[in-house]
Length: 316
Image 1 (cartoon, helix red, strand yellow):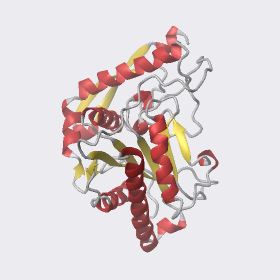
Image 2 (cartoon, helix red, strand yellow; image 1 turned 180 degrees about the horizontal axis):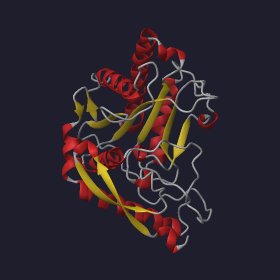
Image 3 (cartoon, rainbow, N blue to C red; image 1 turned 120 degrees about the horizontal axis):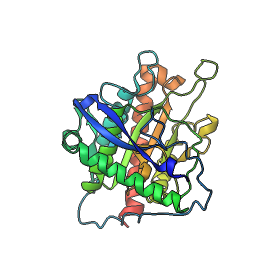
Image 4 (cartoon, rainbow, N blue to C red; image 1 turned 180 degrees about the vertical axis):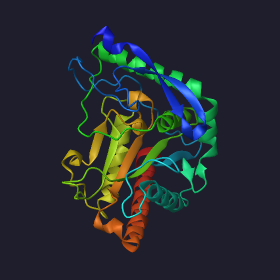
């Protein structure tokens, strides 16, 4: 990889949600209009995909409750899939997340934390991001530097993504990375991101159906543990929902190097899964009655999966 590729540039990012601004050191490997993803790794030589370059976090020791962070996708008042018949993805994400937390309340081994609720962001996470913006950006820059050093050394291969993700707004990028750093500093054991899908359409018409989920690509240190976590969720969700019929989502459990939510640049050490439960325009989502029934089933099924995962993989 040429020195020109790894040369860093400064990009000014306006963080509207918090009324603050940041200078983010971002590699030219990023597309300038998409600081939340890795892309355009021209010249990277192909190597074995088995190189893990950070140790996987040790198993839960049983001395405290297991901490699960549920992240309802997107910001409280912005972001998410386009509206469909006045249905907003971010509202569906929150609805399912609240029900999921309620479903998990009987598990005495588990402490469930929501990244946001009806009142907005979790105050602990929001205050952390507000007061540690500079440190978050330095941390992200350092993690990128480590990643690029591994690429230059031929120890890590950049995988061209099969699925292109939507660009994240700059304030959302800051919050996502800040959440990952907060997770690392607050003994969180599991992360689940809750989403619904809306992209793309065929000839302008909504034609896709079903669920899929994203996990870290296999070279990341939290990949194996995340894949195991995802398998439990997949087993339960497949009982209530069809698998995605979109060609790029055919694997259902999709490895990804780009998504901040699952720890791009190895910014997470713990199991992290992002679930797309359905397309917001598919038939079961367009009627309020069928939509609410499905969301209740999805929350219940996900809770069952989490309880099974904890019982069989952590407390054993």
